[in-house]
Length: 328
Image (tube, rainbow, N blue to C red; front, top):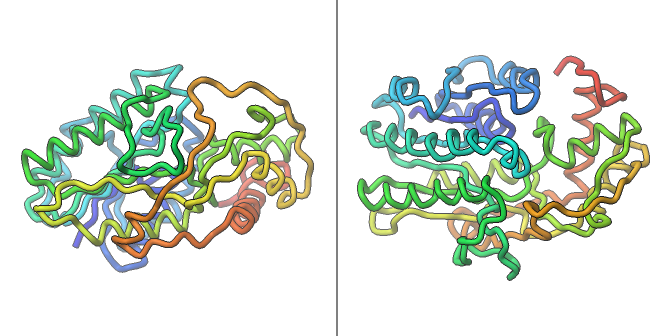
């Protein structure tokens, strides 16, 4: 059993790879190590993965030749987590999102067709596909045709392409709509991480609408359990492709997040109140009943537990100043 995992140097990919390797399966990790955020952090994650059971290939999922070279009869599962992430950056470089999230999805689907022993293709979607929906919590049966960002549109495009490939080629697939994932080894571009750096540096943090926006903050260990649980249960041919929310089933304010960071880091935040951008929705909240019924998924880490764990890692990794990188 060999699992091909894209985005292996990324936040979620790193944690999934580590959990899979602990199960004793062979993991082939793929990542292009782009510079959307600090490549040193990505390299530090890969250093943690080095050893038996894990091999790394530096490649771009939108590169057909590079990805087709990895086609193998040994590959039984593909977990495709590589993507160009970030809602607001899609306003700056839209082309990067089309390349990674649209072309990359097509290349991976074509590659999957050539892996003759493939049992399951699992891929990352996003809660962003729910866009301007107002009914909460978000359910997989909700409309997803009102994206609020190009990022969301590219992730929805990936879902639609996957549906077509499942229909045309009977490719067993599950798409996972991730909600706001946080925890150790996280992404520096995400609010909780950027807030921590600013708090430790004593610089102001921009907080939208007085901290009232809400997110379904989901701790990384819970996410990993959901990803692997879904991976282990491919849909039957008659079932067709799946789409599953994977979140914490709890919506909490950004203001509460800031308060928990202050307590965990032992410093007060300098808050700068700013209007919420048009690309950011007011609230997210995941209905996780579908993935719970399928896998027994039961997120067990509330924000008041997860944030101190992140803060402990953050201080160990960056040092008390939050700016310098120490040994991982």
